[in-house]
Amino acid sequence: MTSGVALGKDVKDEYLKMKQKSTFKYMMFRLSDDKTEIIIDYDMCLKKEDNDDDDRTCWDQMVTKLVPEEPRYIVFDIHAVTKDSRVIDKLLFISWCDDSCPIKERMIHASSEDTIKKNLEGLHGTPLQAHDKDDLEYEDVLKIVITRD
Image (cartoon, rainbow, N blue to C red):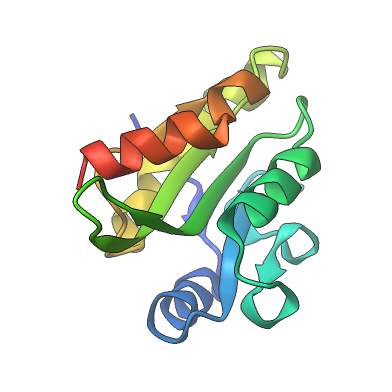
């Protein structure tokens, strides 16, 4: 199911910069006010040079920015170490849509997800679906990322 929502003009370019040059630790995307395109929510992004590269701290900061009534698509540049000491770097796609979000917002968000996923190449495995902040416990997400490697 697709909603007819288009990808904003700078989304793909900024994502490629994130992917190739690690410009952001995470990026958040949202529907425009008129619900016609997916845009970058720059106020909700974290530039790579603005942090100490501690994934846990950045993750916690990201989660605190999320508002239940405002769905977001997120790409998080996650670094993890496997049980056999391999370092993995992955771009994790997260669909945030709290259960308390209005039904119309949830429907548009869900039906527009494919638009962004199809245009952002190199995302890690299956997207993470988060419907409340309990779905975003760092340790649990890290286990998922490592087991999907």
